[in-house]
Length: 132
Ligand SMILES: [Zn+2]
Image (cartoon, rainbow, N blue to C red):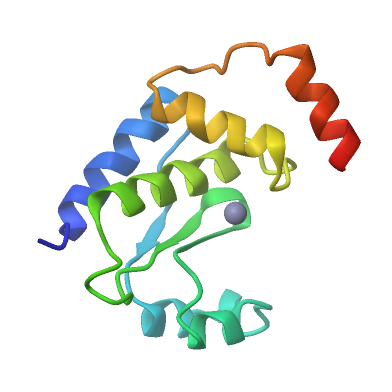
């Protein structure tokens, strides 16, 4: 069963509360609604969205968020959406943090119900440094 918009909003609220940040002003669930917004007109993700490659997006430091329900039914699960919701909420909490080891670590910590994230193991930091 495909999760409802209400379920997504409830999970978004849960994680925004956990990270002590305000909810987005607008949450979009469909690509055409997102692409219709003025901020999306110059979006570098337009092509990716058209290819069905985008699960979620975050703009204006979390004021606008897309949690994309226009994905193949067999691909959309609560698990995938929960990860997307956490991912996009971490972008709102840490707008300057790019994707990578630390970002993924935060996703795992939040997923495990831990916030703020614990201090990372020094070996993990070193491995990140090696691959960065
Ligand atoms: Zn991201």
